[in-house]
Length: 102
Length: 157
Image (cartoon, rainbow over all chains, first blue to last red; front, side, top):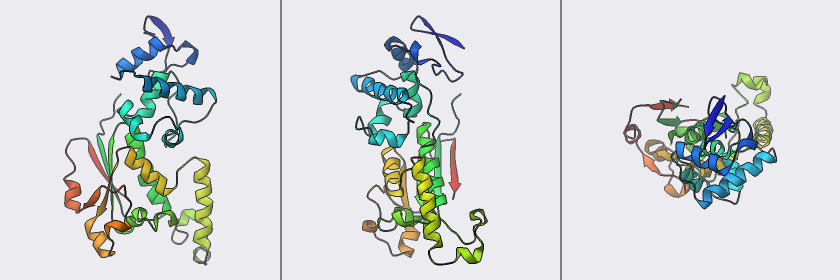
């Protein structure tokens, strides 16, 4: 379905995830973050960019991967994106919600 | 739609690998969905938080029909070790962390880890025998009292 975010029309699935990463930009990320009550700092942008790189390289995302990322530790990850860090951060990053259970 | 589950309390009473991972994956999965989670390790479940034992947990090859190994063969020396090694290999392929690393992840994710006081005394364990990430040693009554809000569920494994 279509949704207007930051004055742009984008395609999202029923959970609100962008279905085409090419439609993502920083304004959209800021809007999506606001919906999740997250105010994006430099650290957030660094994490989002890490997640997007993983997605582009078709590497699966997991909480274990975050631990090994060298970007941030798991505690920081939960602090940056409270209430389910992987699902919220991927939504803001404009990439699919990870399907992994771990 | 947001889930109505707010908090999951797990009681882990077994030390076979499949049961331990079930508890860990469900607790981690809860945190990933924004649900609080705690684990109470009791009886044999204590093996999963003993520094010297936690990396040596096994799957059960005897009395476990799902292994599809005849009971008499399952009891042969080394069978559990072989079956465990095979299962650990499959887990590694799925990027499932080993027990020690998984406990670190759970603790970092905000899962409270508790040891059962009665079982700790029964097995003559001391705090130094248990993992550093442990949040404390509780009675079952203390654990019940950690239920503060509606939407809390308790699961015995």
